[in-house]
Length: 609
Image 1: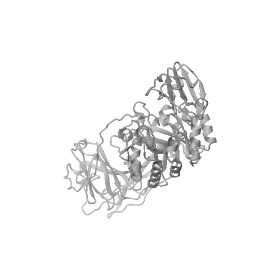
Image 2: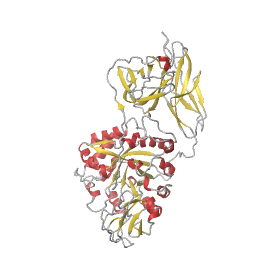
Image 3: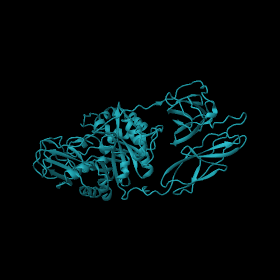
Image 4: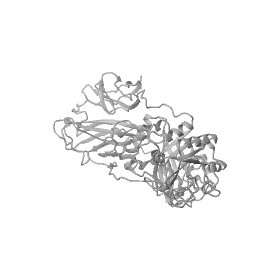
């Protein structure tokens, strides 16, 4: 992608690492005035996310709280937030921070952590007393954790849950059923049917046993349930078997005011197959998160959120990543890749190529971060350009890109998508010839061939030309600068047709000072644009400067002294027909926010692939 905009908002986020050995805290309040409830909020196999909720059940305010519990050997906390979490062997302690220790009567506070291992907490104490607000009975142990609930008979509005019994030295009296960590029922048996639910909605259930002395044991592992129904939830990917991939920009939430929910309201989510989230940065030879506020911290209100549920201040993940998680729950066919690099951040790839294995390991650590491991299905590398010049010039050599692709596939394995956005310079001796794209293709699922930005007002005097020509034409300013030549060159280098996606720009490039309507006219500079001179979104251009002709499969428009080229639904239909005739794997586009509010360009791709 040639152009990039980025705005960073700085927000302080407190995440405290687990400290070393400490002594046990002194009780701050009477045990009967406070309770602590545990819930496993996520489980990704190799680790999990847990949450403790502390509630003041007394009649006077609390000034501090301390939760203690035991984990079985092999289970431990790896990171925590909103509490100081420490341990002495397998005994763990969570203590309030300076700002969240005070609790008014009836108020509650939560803190969370990421953990490894499969165990559940036992022996919970809050401020030295029982976590259920009662006093431990001497000689009477709390019950064990029940088995993980199994879900059956799932309907639009109900689900049946069943679990294996807990054990207790004096006998189990009943079970609390927890939905999303909140008790919804207490039953004497080992099954329960929860009703009154919403169609097409995700829920999480766990259970907790009580003994005859009313002591509670640890919470079971949780089961995720999605009710049936829900008119906005497709169960299958769009028809045709072709890829329809869109880039979602991290910075688009700022000046462009474009959010994940816009994919739903525009109707685009039901028509795409993949999303590239852009961009992660490449620094010191490693993949790194770029704007943490946009990605993980920004709080969304209910009306801004994909599922209509507002973020809370204490939830462990917010921002774009959490909204993407909700989008995938609503549209299960969508796969999301984390894209690193781009025009602005490609300067770090040269150092990365010097130790490709270490780079790949760093990328997987970001993609698989336990806070959002379920969000991403793969990684995309947008190196502009290996062994050639983009914003900066790279001299890594023709083998560097292939080596990087090989290392990424080795690290991520066969179950992740590994893709790359690459140059579309089909000229003789151009950027496609500078790197071993043919050799690298064996390690990658597909290439996003950036068949746009061939011509524009970066050549301020012109001549005017379509920035995304499908084919060559008489008078084209540079040979090989068109989609057909680029695709042909990549095929000749051994890249399978099905691994090539045709690129579509959801924007136009334009000049000003132009008197000639047909392509090839002189200009005096870049036409005015909303965010950057010489560039404008399709949603603006379709009304402000409607197309007056087509050349090489792309529309152009002459209005006043401005001359623009851009793709329309009609030209996209032609390009998709061509892509199918070439046996290509599909198409991708840059980027969602340039489309209309009803997603007419996304629809044009989907309807014609």
